[in-house]
Image (cartoon, rainbow, N blue to C red; front, side):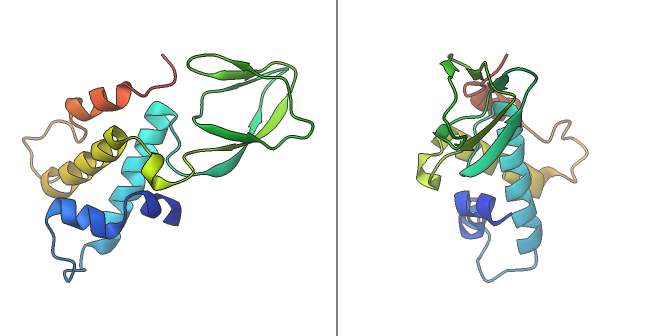
Length: 150
């Protein structure tokens, strides 16, 4: 999943974790944590942190929560109704869209910081028995501001 590693590089995560770049024993694990944290954010908020082409299949209409929508690939372009939290393509069973942030610098800082905080907790506190949750409530609250659904 190189695309997630474009959003948060291994070097940035190691800097955040205060790990010397010359120490490489945990690099694979940290990369896995970067991927997992950003996937979790995408699932929780429907903000897609890197650009991709996505096909949506509905029954008579497609409701798309993913954000941002950059381009409608389906030709001819279907009719779309825009709402605050989602877009509806009422006359189409299948719609192809280009979705996700076009460059890493467009991803909201709150989402990047949430991912880095999750990585920090997973890296340093995952083996402690006192930690009852591996995703702090403050991180969930920061992500919830960007949720595209109720």
